[in-house]
Image 1 (cartoon, rainbow, N blue to C red):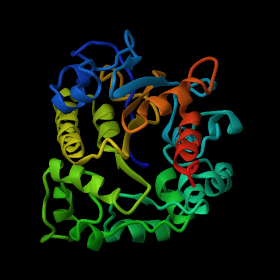
Image 2: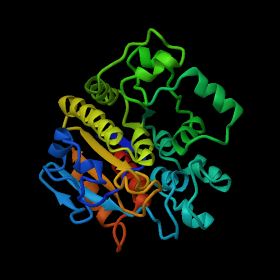
Image 3: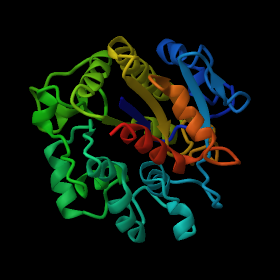
Amino acid sequence: MRVLMIFLDGVGIGRRDPAVNPFFAARLPTFRSIVAGEIPSLGRAHIHSSHSTVLPLNATLGVAGLPQSGTGQTALFTGENGARIIGKHFGPYPYSTLRPLIVERNIFRRLRQRRKQPIFANAYPRRFFEYAERHPTRLTVTTYSCMKSGVPLLNGDDLAAGRGISADITGAGWHTLGYPTLPVITPTTGGKRLVRLLDNHDFVLFEYWKTDKAGHSQQMAEAVDVLDQLDELLKGVLEAIDLRRHLLLITSDHGNMEDLGTKSHTRHPVPAVMYGHRQGELAERLEGSQRRGPSLCDVAPALLSMLTEDG
């Protein structure tokens, strides 16, 4: 079994309203094919079909206030309720007292301890590594987890060689970052590249932050364009995925983009979209984890169990 996890920053399940929710303003033919033709909404957040399941995940974590990336991603990638531990939502970077917990409990470290091969597919330019040296506490949960777990962060050479993809999917933004000759790829090629990483890795994570940025911009045209690129990426994934071995999981850390009527985050649930090999089993594990429904804290333990129970 191999897992491709596409993490969408700031995407909740919102109202079925194309005036404020870009998921209902965009066409999204590939995403619709994954979710049995129906975009999840607050009116229908549970979607089940023979090849996929969509479940709502609680992103509030039982804590008052608006969910944030630091604590939301701590829950998602460690299984620990960081918001409850510190008594508040916090972000975008992890709270200082949560860093030791992230180091010990993050999914990358725990997979490596069990002799599995994880990879963070996002490639970073030189200026990121320079920034990380100057500001080691201003790293996201994902980058911090990798740096503390012996999982190398990919760079421009990896991107040029096709061993990773850019956070903007195509790599077009790298031309202004000191990489004028780096090839720009199509989103479909990017999706196929993610699946190809599953040949040598048990767990592949891709983080797409443009969804959160588009949510804060409150610009429908920008949000639809961001989703169109994501849909083309998913087209490449579906063209290359092996449903006999590969599981695709699409999820998020908090709501934002699904309601362009507000500039802030939301308290909406976030989707867990499961497609492919053993998707029904993952859905059952998530649904059976909490009496009141699954939360962000349930994802990492379920994935770890499924990826390692066969040795």
